[in-house]
Image (cartoon, rainbow over all chains, first blue to last red; front, side, top):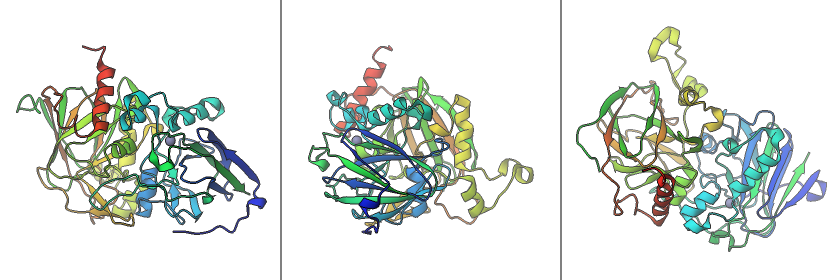
Length: 212
Length: 242
Ligand SMILES: [Zn+2]
C-alpha cells in the first residue's frame, strides 16, 4: 500500500548517509519515527531490530508475517518481536512491498546461490558481524544475527508455492518509514551484493532519517 | 535410499510434547503422522558448533520455493546440507509460520496446567523449543524460523496466508536423510494457525534407518545447481573425517 509521509526531511533530528557495504547502528526511542530512503533506487536495506534494553528480544520474521496474515510488509504492517510484542509499525511506504522471507546474503550463501569461489565477496552478514564486534558493549555475537527484513526487495510467492526474486519495485527517492513502539536498536546492512541483477550489479547508498 | 527395511529404532512422541536427539550423518529420520492432523515443529543445529543452524531464508531462496517437499534439501546458515528430503507423501510442508506461544495457546484453547491435567497440560511450541534447547546450552538467541512438518500454509496473489486444515492423514510419511551430524529439536504442539476448537493433540511416530550411500546421481544432490554446491560445501566439511 502506497502511503506518503507528512514528515519533512528538514525537520529531522538525525540524518546519515550509509554507503553500500557499510552498516548502520542506532537506537530509535519509542515514539520516534525512522525513515530509510533509497537514494538511487533498487538498493536492498537488510535490517534487523532488537529491544534496545534486551537484545534477546528481536524482530521475528515468522511471527510478523503470521500475526498479520500476509507475507509482504508495507504501510500498516506491525513488526513483531520474538516475544510477541509490537516493535515498530510501518507508517509510510512509497514502495508498496518489502520482503522478509529472503534473508540476507552471507559469504556462505553466496557459495551456494552463485558459485563456490564467491566466498570471499563482502556480504550483509559480514557487515552485521563487524557491527556487533565493533560494539562489544551490546554483548551481541553471531547468535544474534537472525532473519531480517529486506527493505526495497521484491520476492513474490506464487499460489503453487514458488518463490521468485523479481526486479526491484523501488526507485530513486522511494522510502519506508517506521514508528517505534519500544526503544529499538536498528541494525542495517546496506547490501553489497554484486551477484544479483535486482540492483543492476551496482549497490548504492541509502539515507537514514529520524524524527523525534 | 534406505539400506535396510527394518528400522534401527521406533518410537512414539505423544501429541503436545517435545523431544530432541542427535542424528548422525548417513542415517534417515522417518517422520510418520500416526493419527492424521499432526504438526511437528523442528529446529536443527550442528553439535560441533551450534552457531550453525537451520536457515529458512537460505533453504527457500536457494531452491526458489515457499514450500518444502521431496527433492529439497534443508540448509544451514553456513551453506551446507543438514538433511535431504528423500520421501514425502504430502507435497507441502511449512517453514514460514513459526511456532505457537503460551499466549496464543491460552487464547485459542484455554489454559490447562500440569496441576489440573498432568501430562495433558497445554504446552506450546515456543516453550517446548526452549526446554529442549537448554539441554545443549542453547536458548532464546538460538531460536530461529522452524519447520512445521505435515502443515500447509499457502498464499494468494496479494500474499495473504491461509492455513489448510485436513492436509495430513494417518500414515503420511516424510524421510529425512542426514548429511551432517545434527541436533534435532522437535515438538508436537499445534501449528500456530490451526483453529481446531479443541487443543489438537497428535502424536508423532519416528523411526531411524541406516541410509544407502549418496551417489553423484542422487536426486536431492542434483535437484538444483544450488543444492549441488551445498553438497560440495558439506563434502569439504567432512573431508578430513574418514
Ligand atoms: Zn546483502
